[in-house]
Image (cartoon, rainbow, N blue to C red; front, side, top):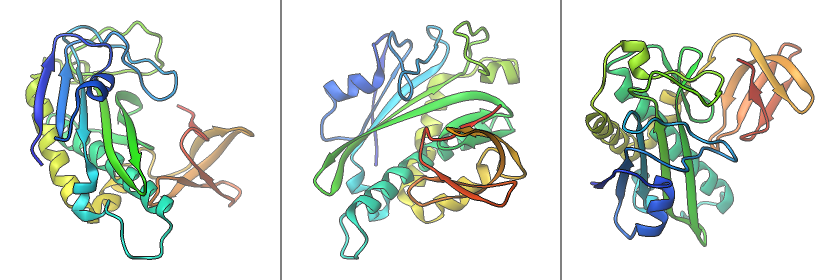
Length: 252
């Protein structure tokens, strides 16, 4: 899996650019500035021009993940296999970022499902969009926003941090991108240990911490993350709670 790499001075969204210009090859586009960068749902992404790493990967994963994304002969429901394949990509890119950035700074973790954290502050976010074709994933677009050289944040986001704020020097964004892509390629080609590595890097992997769902705030510890990406918590009353994305929030 070798990526064709494109660099843009400005675009509305690197994910949207790939939707319009992507073809059958695996490719990556990165931009100095996004006018409409966004995260999951209605969340926007703040990025000072030329300071951060903003990129998207177009991947045709039915050819990747060690064959795990192909239709199989087993009896598992197609939807289950599809969800597991999608979460494998989420784990792979999250781990690739923490590995590449972890070479220059410590205290990194992955806040379920795929936010990149330094201690209790958000260093980066990931948005993955899939196009399905029958029982398989036709292609996936993985959008990443990583705070690199920006030092002032004005959007009102509660806990942003950048690599420069932590390490007190600038970083080469293109080299960082290439390091992430190299790590990502290794992870997607060997998915057998993704879950083990992901659990080791998980934010709040030990102890009880506050969370909130539709019933209010409660204390719980992380018990597991299922193969299709659901968070399994065990609250301080001994009750197991399972959540899909957006059904529970971390209280930070």
